[in-house]
Length: 385
Image (tube, rainbow, N blue to C red):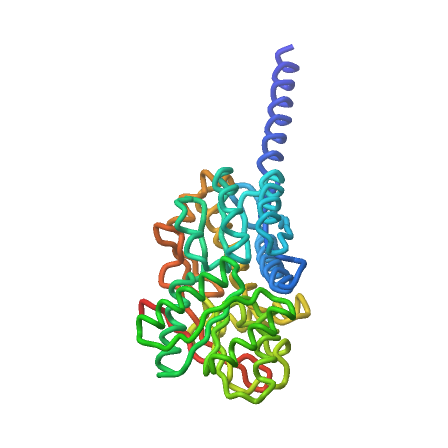
């Protein structure tokens, strides 16, 4: 009887231990959201974001990352906000309801800012790879982060370039009235005026043939030498094409919204070499070129298209989330949020750390121009250098 009892106890222990072992070995499903426009005029930029995030997810799964002793299985959930603020709020709620542990997005400031309140209320960590409006990280949300510099820094840098490169020239400003476009244009205007530059007009162009014709007429009426456009490549390209038709020797400037591989195609062959100077938040110096080129090669091989702008930043944002979860031993945002705040991540886009507002510390900016239809890097710099 004693032998049978001991055998039964041993068997029960083996079954319980096996069950506990199986449970501890079960994969921890970690859902990461990526939100941005997959449709509409700038859908190509949102698709670029998703490709970058998906590469990170695939890399993490290939590395068999463990969180809190459990093997983690990462899953990407994608939401199309069409760069529309109302749709962005709906997408944010869908991702929250789906149980995401973190969100990479949104792409444009006009969508990122309204969505950020929902993520904050739900306690979900949000890292934007591209929203540059300063307001995003100045709302007091502990969950909001970005891994590129903001509009104030970028526009101030462009204003410095404008006043140094085009002293005394007549500068006309256009913006598309979005949170991004108006924000960058307003800072550019303020900084140029502060430096003694000559702003001759600031008007609006929200897209469409009528707006385009009015904008071109305004540029000609004020005899502008330099045109700064606050907006996206889809509107900037046709605008620059129309202005360039009469052979006018005009320089064009803008932020990261126009600084894409698509701009030259949208502007057409009439755009003179070196006519555009644009700035992109982020960028790597000589020391980071090898890592970036490796990423770009892998990206092209995997997706069949070149990187547009933000894919390396969405890749790094996913990796930052994963590193924080690993350090905290949990995918629960409440538990890993403190690790995001003190992160030190060596990414494709450089060293990533955040200040008390959630902004990247000493973020880089890159100046580009276009020659023979191709975007060419001019220089990379950091405001703190």
